[in-house]
Length: 316
Image (tube, rainbow, N blue to C red; front, side):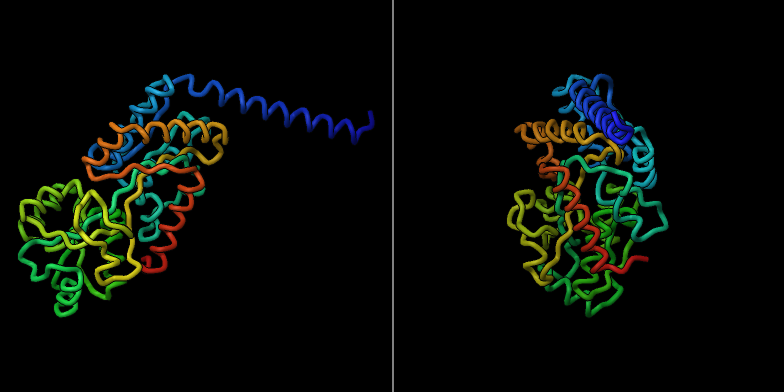
């Protein structure tokens, strides 16, 4: 055999061997416990991770172990981005990991992560303390323009969905609600109901009972459509801020070089979990809607979120 043909033959055999190894790996995956790295305990990120992990374990026959990492969102992202790309270390997180680096000097690990599935989504609800002299989005905008810098909004860390929702509202409505930052949702909600802050973009699960009791007033939904999570509440886009949209999305990632067959297997299993009625109910009762779609769909959603924020909000 000529040297050139021998080289081609060798490369072909090598490629076939690698392909066969990848298929075999995918067919036997998982054959040991899988780690899902996520945020600190409590909150929507941790809850989504735990419900999904329970379902994946039941379907795939191996434990999916939750590993909580507190602090900045980039801490769990870094842990997974630098892990072995074998499908045994995954990340479950939300918008914060791709938006926080736009506003703070934080590492951006997104190029080192491969999307698997958009697991859940949660539109925020624009709520106010009853003492605020507004009962519609348009009235709130008019009040904020008449009293610039006098209305405060409560939010989590810079880059969190409720922070982005408020800053996007500021930019698109031409107002200046002043941020008051909190380390957790509970103290923020306590101050909102106490009147120490006047406005918040909160998850429906955290505010719906307070709205029903009259302790808070719901003005608008941050998604593009009304939601059963907050019946009867109009969208902000239809109430005076055309084009407004900001939804918290929670999804599963793997290290970037994870074999495509493993990504596909995880996506398929996650879709089955998210389709289960009891799983849908678990998420709905906490203010979330189940997601789905392909890894490409999730990638498009992430990139769209970044583009929308970069266009409307000037990063620091």
